[in-house]
Length: 418
Figure 1: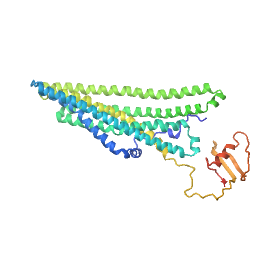
Figure 2 (figure 1 turned 180 degrees about the vertical axis):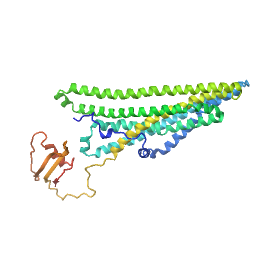
Figure 3 (figure 1 turned 90 degrees about the horizontal axis):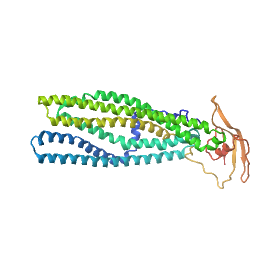
Figure 4 (figure 1 turned 60 degrees about the vertical axis):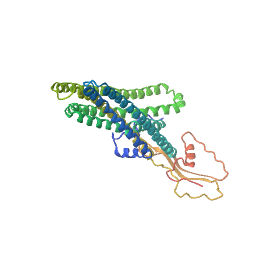
C-alpha cells in the first residue's frame, strides 16, 4: 500500500484568488442567473433596512421625545419594528434561495465528476488513492457549495450594507463619520495579518484531510493484508500521527479566529469610545444632538459586522480556490485509453481469435527511470474454440495479460487481437 503521508501533486494549492478559476466557477452559476439576480435584489433590500433603525432612533430622540409627541413616537416605534421584520423576511428568503443555488451547483458538479471518474483509465486509479478521490467528490465539492451558498452572492449584501451605512453616516454628520472611520487602518492591518495566517492553516487542513482519508481507505480495503502481516500496531501509530496533524491544523485555525474576532470587537469598542468622546464634546458645544450621537453608536456596531463577515468570506474564497483547482484538474484530465473516432468494423462472422505479438508492458518505472517491465516480448495465439491455461508465480503477468486483452491498459510495444 502506498504511503498516504507522501505529498501528492493534487495536494498543492495555488493562489488565494485566481480569476481564471473564478470565471470557470461562474460558468456553473450561469444556468441559475435569474435566481442570482433575485438573491442580489433581496440582499440589497435587506441591506437598506440596516440603515433605517438608527435613523428612526435619531428622529425619536431629537424630535418626538422633546416635543412630547406620543403619536410620532408610536409611529417611529412601529416603523422600527417593521424594518426589523422586513429585514428578517428578506434575509430568510435570500438564505433559502442561495442555499438552493449552492445545492443545485453541487449536484451538477458531482454528476460531472462522477461521469469523469467512470471514463478514466485504470492507470489513473493506480496512481491516486481512492480516499483522495473521495475527498474530491465530497469535501471539495462541499467547499464549493459553501462558496455559492454563503460567499459569492452574500458578499454583495455585506458590500451594500457598508455602502448604505457609510452614505447614511456621511449625510447625518460627516465629522462624526470621519472619527468613526479613523480606526479603519487598524482593521486593515488586523485583516491582513489574519488572512496570511489563516491561509496557511487552511492549506494544512486540506492537505492533512486528504492524507487521512487516503490512509483510512487503504487500510480498510486492505485490512486482510494488515492483519496477515501483523501491522495493526504500526498502522495504529501512523493513524495517530495523521490524526494529530489534522487536529493540530484545525486547532491552529481556531486559535487565529479566536484572536481575530476579539481584536475586531476591541476596534469596534475603540470607535464607540471615540464617538462618545467627540460626540459628547460636540453635544456640549451644541454642534450635534444626542439623537445623532445615539444613531452613530448604532451605525458603528452595524458597520463592523459586515467587515467581520468579509474576512470570513475571504477564508471561504481561498478554500474554494484550492478545491476548484483540484476539481478542475481532475475534470480536465484526458483519458489515456480512447476509442478511435472512426473504428473499424470486425468482419462477420467474428472468428474469436486472439493473438499477442511481441508485447511489452510496464505499469510504472523503477527508481533509475527505466520501465519496470511486467511483460517482455510476450507472443501467443489462441485459435477459435481453443482453451489456454496461463500459470505462473505471483507477479508473473497473468492478470496483466487479461487487463491488456480487455484494454484496461494500452500496451507499450505491440498487441493485437482479432
